[in-house]
Picture 1: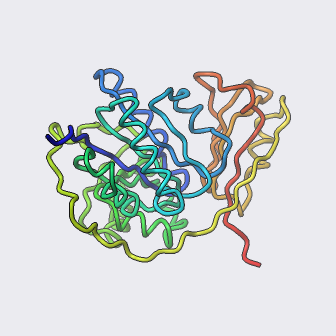
Picture 2: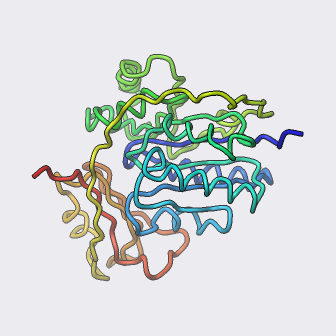
Length: 294
């Protein structure tokens, strides 16, 4: 007798595209529907900001650090998937990759034993920052590889782009990936039904998996920067406007109170925190920049 098959969703996207925000939306909808989701988050760096943003997670949430699940951590990914299957018996699996990982290469792990016995239909969704595309920022390398291997493109942050410019943004994506459906979204608000089939069908993974194209990862440097409590918000924002900085995130106690700090390209955002994180995270920012070539 074959095991019950469950659907799997791989969420990829360049640094700062809004992957974690989308995951939060999906988890909230799953809770309302009474569905159990097993979540694996693959974060660049080891600060654990995403865990805090996702509310701690619990036993159905595992973070994988120190590499990308599409290659260096592929064995860890398979072991973790099987552990979650045995421990929590989820209705769905969601894998949030790092901003440097490729979704298609990640889904190839579903062909491996023993997870090939129970993972059903899978979808590779790539989250795209509409403002990033409009500015023409970082659209080669990892970004293009991610978009080209998507089953579904979530054009996120459309609220940051003039509506009349959205067709231009979509045309740029179509030049990279002409076939994948494009879903427009703001703040990750997407109907989960677009990602998960109502009845996951049987998938035959008994043969040889599709071949992945050779790829090289862009190299990123991560470091943690300490920020003193009570810093004025304007001073903090000014200090984070650095040309070498691709992404930054963390929690800081500013002069105006505790803030979630998010930096994507030139945009620096400080927002009030809904749920206070572990005190050990406050005053520490994860900074991500491109590795310097010596």
